[in-house]
Image (cartoon, rainbow, N blue to C red; front, side, top):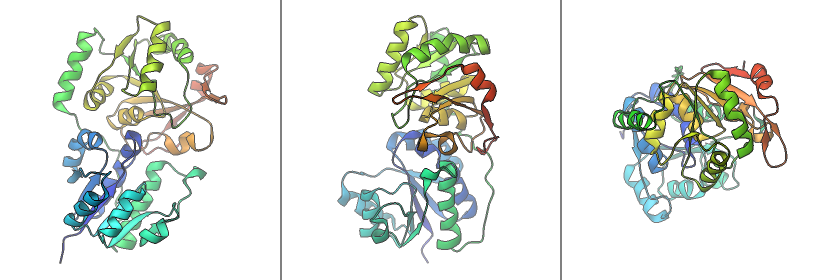
Length: 338
């Protein structure tokens, strides 16, 4: 009998992939003898290598844009189950053509009914759960309905282990910039999937954060063009603000771990900070599917507080942020708003 080999995929952005970690942990605990592979973007798989080793999960890399190579790679691995946490045509069709026996995903696309043989109806836009919980529901379906196991493990708060080499580089980077041991890391940029504050709002907020927490604010800048433009505009108003830039993902992760507080909009680095145990203050949009009920940090060891901003047509506004902070919600370790 072939060993149970399971492929789990989430090939979009950093925050989306991080919200899959509880799912991977659940599958590992429920199916301790299974071989579990995780397919994400290569840079994310590399970032999570330590977590994968700790949980005996193998990060894999395949060429996503060449369907023939993808199909051959899936066929060669002889997966018995493929779980697509975010179903994409190229991946699901490749698994179908590679004859992966059990193909599982949310039934959210018209072609889901043609290419999948197991699925779960999920209306994530209703904001009934966190994204991580929707992912977990799929994992529980795989365990109970596909593999036919009665195991129902509980998942403790998770933490990504230290990347030793990147941690040493992060400490050197902070020392070279004369950044003290107690600092707030503000990562204002995001991928554009939700509304964000503008540069003026962040520039006004920085001295208020420093006064509130009695710590300096250090900016971090991602590689995306919009991130760079936003941070440069903030620096035009606050030219002496210290900045971390040109960091690898692993170096950013370790700088987030060293910070006393991470402040960010709904973006991957906010989730990454949560999963390395750092306290976070997330600035969220009140609009529709951008709300924290779905996209707040979930499942890590860091304490999380949610600041719900006001929304205009194109951007967020803080208004009286201290009043919002007093009204803000703390999250328990598994993400429930309290």
